[in-house]
Amino acid sequence: MKTKISLLVAMLSLLPAPVLAHPHIFIDAKFEVVSAPDGSISELRNVWNFDEVFSSSVLLDYDKGGNQTLTASELKAVGKTVRDSLAQYAYYTNVTSNGKPVPMAKPEAIEASYKDGSLILTFSLKPEEKTFLKGTTIFGIYDKTLYTAVDFATDNDMVVSGSALGRCKRKVVRPNPKEVMAENQAALTSMFFSDPKGTDYSLLVATRLEVDC
Image 1 (tube, rainbow, N blue to C red):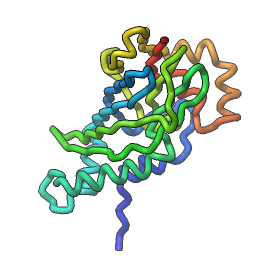
Image 2 (image 1 turned 180 degrees about the vertical axis):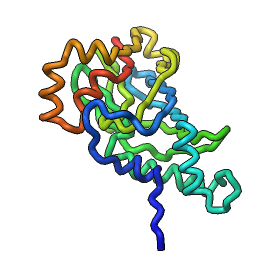
Image 3 (image 1 turned 30 degrees about the vertical axis):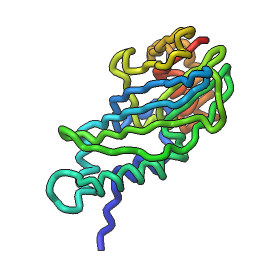
Image 4 (image 1 turned 120 degrees about the horizontal axis):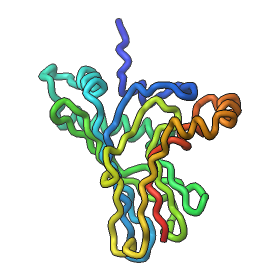
């Protein structure tokens, strides 16, 4: 019996990719930081819209009825697979508060939908421990292995909400990869040998949201 390996599972079981590798999966994302009244992080809301090629592969693997769409139960299975498998990659979410990592808890659920040929995932993350928005908090949504590209089309796709954030300044930072390479060429060579997964390079070039309070 032939074993068909789902591309969805393949994405969630990523093998190390070399620095400067080309991504194979593309996500158009929207991200929102929601503050609680006391000035802490209430939740991080994510909406991921996958490219049509990858979405079609998910449809092929999960459309058990063969009707070219995904039922509620099939979409639930997709969401569960992503929730379980992406935990080891922290859901591509990298947050620091004044330079210190802020671990995120596993989301209660990941809602999946399929519309106009695209797989869409919606979910919220919360810090494992209460974290206040004081000083500089940096939010980066990216795949450290460079296998998946997470793109924010406009700066308005990374937003903040909540009355406590009224005192804060929001800035979307979009590093230029060519400039990063030119400015860090020697360092990048060293990075590759010390970290062949590409973690350091992905951090340098990732779009990020900086919140200063």
